Image 1 (cartoon, rainbow, N blue to C red):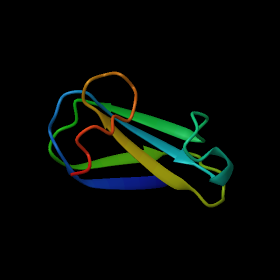
Image 2 (cartoon, helix red, strand yellow):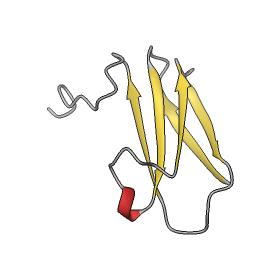
Image 3 (cartoon, helix red, strand yellow):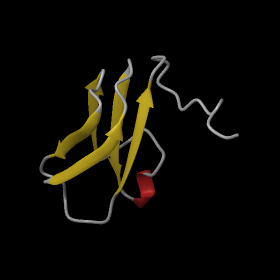
Length: 78
């Protein structure tokens, strides 16, 4: 199992999406495992990915406040 602890999560509407991916899958939709936490509470969120095959992985997190299932870049950079 792989346990991810996300700290500093903000209590905002929408879903927190997590994807556990290997190098070949990185930033693509075919994650090894995925998790969704609807309307997360503020603070720390624990996500558990069960029965993950041995290997090297990256985790991607996206808090989709507007429900469009996309990474909106507007307002991210000054």
